[in-house]
Image (tube, rainbow, N blue to C red; front, side, top):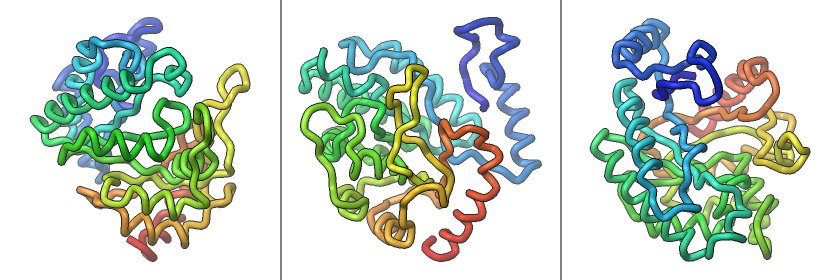
Length: 271
């Protein structure tokens, strides 16, 4: 996918597809997207190589965030996604309150930066990153307390975080179903990802749980006729996107067509 990063951190730039550091490259992409009748639903800022929780100096994180905001503005993107970067186990090393304050303070600054570019910041909580308990999610959201900040609710992550409690440190904090979890987030959801869940995580190279598996519709256990009405009521979307998320699913392009058809059905029924 297109991204603003000018250099390949793992090899030659010729093997770094999608890099568009120059405005001329972005203008060319805009023209192609317009010709295809397509738009971008948002951007997942490439901040995974940065430090957030495990540093008291967010300067580099904020620099990269601003670069992604500039890129988003050039491409007509109105939403920018963030996460807490470090895994849940980081809270074994960093005191909870210190970690909490670093995330909140940094994201407050991010929201101010994003506002200058007309962007909404959405936090995609998931089992693979710190602060993956329902109470943590509400507390951080409410502490940031910015009009252009909200949650990204991914129905697979919602299952794994709110119902299964995958990769939660210490005592699990879960709900009987996503319905109760969604209700606890009412008014805070500003972006939606729709995909199924089979109550498992994608595995990393060592075979350990990483983050939610994102199986295509019909390969999981979710009842969207129960979930979607609650999600519609709880959301405050600044746009009309419902987005498919097939992250980590092998050969995602092959599954995209059937998933798009299923989302069309859900939009017709609940959108």
